[in-house]
Length: 463
Image 1: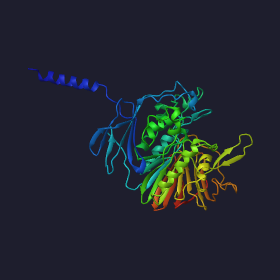
Image 2 (image 1 turned 60 degrees about the horizontal axis):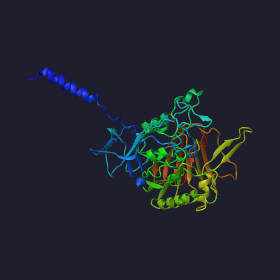
Image 3 (image 1 turned 30 degrees about the horizontal axis):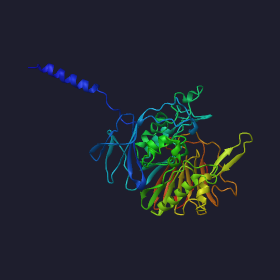
């Protein structure tokens, strides 16, 4: 007969042995995004060898593999904007599970995930969120004042949105931090998971947990740049191992994706389209991108027939201004919307986007901006001010006559905020009405606007 004390010691030893067995780490990121027709998709990125468990309304299963575990491979010096063989790329596994309609509770590895409401009335809009490390431009990623995206994300989460819309450009840490630049010392760089995590998933943690996301692709996520991570982690479409930006020979497919619609309820919807591979100089005759973006426009037009009120979402503005200052003379030059899209879309419709589009949400220019027109053009909001180094050349309160931001557009209102970090919110006030607020990094209101149909007005012409 075993003495009771010896029995207890034996049980304790077994339990201690079990506790010391290796266990899979929790996922590095878990979130919900909305894909075509607003279908919710649970995503997770993990360093573990298997996908984590997902519990849906009390039933637990293992998430499906989206992209196999491994480091993001180098594309090669001739095909990447930056090439650093020594860049760290930890092996990760990308996982996903489509969520059924009517689901009420979802968790991944015990972490609750947010689910979409029946009507999405409170929307956060952010863009251009990464920390710039490239060429001669280096942001102090270690300084939360110089790179405040984590603070912006936390403030936006505190607003309690129903939905987060990111208008593109997540990945900016492309080159190593210079040895004489302590503000970014030790930052990961390159196109692997380590840089993606530092640039987006880690600082966005609070906002990823706050609401589902709608995600547009920026030029920083083109195949020549961060496209490999884009397809593994963030794109709403099915993952294609033959067209995932690993092989430059497949870029003509992987650099484009079909637009899709996300219903908001109450007769309104978002239409998300991929503009990552446009050309700001315009396209040369015969460029394959012309046919691809022509197809994009026709699909946008078809989607826009589904609902009465349409808000388009992409990365590149079509109806907004940017400004450049000549370093020698100090002269300021204004430029309008993206030349490549203007060229292709303008050949199909003079107003660029189909007549059924009322609002365009974009990023790319590192500022906040609003434009509205007395002509039949959508109102435009630019929200590229959430983290990356800001544009600092101010826009004029009244642009020069004869210089519209888009061909044929007649400007009736313009508002901007230059050199200020923050986020934008949209709260639905009626079938075609929205209250827009421009918040700084701490959530303080800096400007307010109203949207009625395809027209908008802001309280301040310049913050």
